[in-house]
Length: 353
Image (tube, rainbow, N blue to C red; front, top):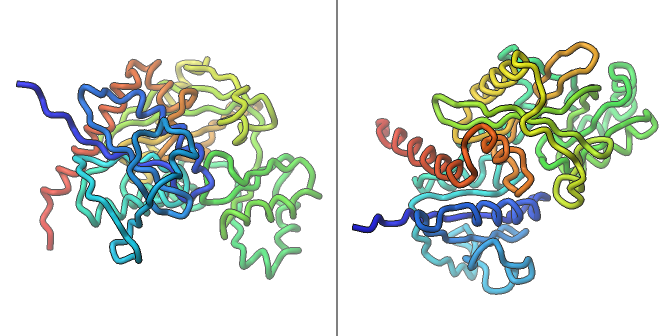
């Protein structure tokens, strides 16, 4: 008897500044899902937050945008929502309104299985400031940083600029707390640029980080699992410019990679250990990519950030690191789906008060 296919709802696009990245990741995932095993419903979410079922993520952007859209909100005016038949939901929504716990909250309300981190882990992972606080509380090595709120920036601009000048040496980074794919990030090599850098970051978030630059190597490690997560071999990013920015990640693609990274075995094991600790610190499940700096002068390892929906493009580190660690892309996707079902099943066993 022929096995029944698992029905997957693949969600992509979204309201964030990483909309276009999501389209690329979703197309890659779609191409690597086993069509003999899975039946895929592709759901495109536009930049206004409305959705429509499309043939696949492989459609050109103009074709994705054509047609009648519906609202996720059932009481919205002119809502023409179609019923979706899915056994599990697979969000490929980078950045706010997809990676930050919002869509995960909708899945929880609907009581349906989904791939990736829960509401809590997604929200914490998205907020770099909160994630750093939790990592620091767990005694993980984090880079020196300060958090600046927009309200304080408006009211105390001169004192904040003076604090930055006093506490940081060049270069340092200014970045939005809730954004990914290097959107809104400035590498500051001149204190005269500081005000402009903060203004740029505040375009994307009300909370930003000023973070000391580290001279050394940029490393990444993929983590997979629920209660017993495993870490891949680490990889290295070798940027072609000042840092691994949005353009080089998704447009030019000139950066080179070490997959796996050429590291001493002791450093590899430590990166893997810290990756799992960072993952557990935010109570993550499903998947995440943990980013690191390896300081050139001291050999110190610093946890940079954790990404709960990492890039899944053809050049993205998350699937590539698992591939060199013995888990091919299609098998990785199947494992992520299995983990989503596993977590949902365990939750259903709990008593509802």
